[in-house]
Image 1 (cartoon, chains in turn brown, red):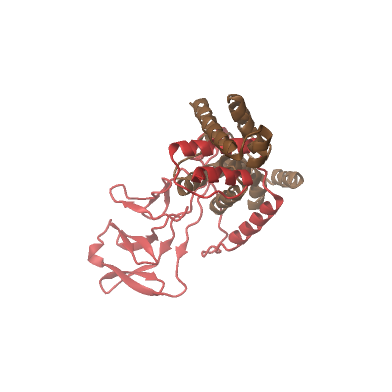
Image 2 (cartoon, each protein chain N blue to C red):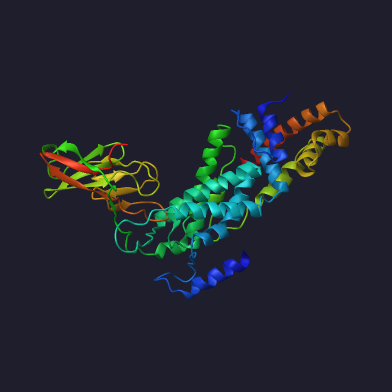
Length: 187
Length: 220
């Protein structure tokens, strides 16, 4: 992808396109738009829904919605902003449809968006680590085993020397508390 | 203890598509925490299969777009304003401030392959200077008489297909979806989109037997 983007970029520069300012790069065609943005949109969606099947569906929806009206010579920054704005709407609709509440949003990402946005959301892992660190030892442990260690409930229970039933309760309470910590952190 | 919220989290952990349920505030917070922890472990890079499959699907969708019906190559030119960029991005793109308006996309006509003339209103009900909405099922639009001439434009926004509403005092056709508005002659009045939508297509109209008639597709 890197090489391809390079060559499109080169071609772009070789063609004078009216009165564009220096630094206002444009995409060669829809495929260049797609190649450059599909990874970013998918990573963003994954970070917001936590599973691949839904992240893929939502990414598909963003491109299906945004690409047709995007057959234009808009700058790279404008195209990215437009995709992000579309992604925000798509995500909001997804939550309305599934849980009936805005569990996660893209407001933050839109707020910090610039013509050259950072490729991913670097804050998520840092936030997760901070939340885990704020939990009591046993809560942290069960979440680490299940979410980071990919343990089944039984494996996690064995690891902690508790029954499966206990592990369940522990996980449930740990998530509740993690949620509380996360909310506090936000406010 | 297999609550829907518990199942949701287990689905996330298993990488399955989670099942929808009506979440309480607490449950939503729990799901949010679970999602955050999931994204710690996986950067969410898309699979190559997915990227290739979606690319093919998009290629198919874009190939289906009808060719412009009027002569000449359709030009896609943007009209960018600071307001448009800010609305789309939630942030002002600095270089967009100096990008100037270029020529607008060309206007098109909507003509059915075969069709019939259908009376919409009595000619006397469309005095000079008025604009009237009409709905013939397959075709919705706005009729207008100006300088004695009758004309009609489509009532469907050229951005995403929302139905336009007439603001008679302002003589504007407003889109309820994205704050786009058109003049009653179909030209673009204002928008906050990153890309200027095309003007509204014109419909074929005539006056016959004391009625204003619009050429529409035959009933199915």
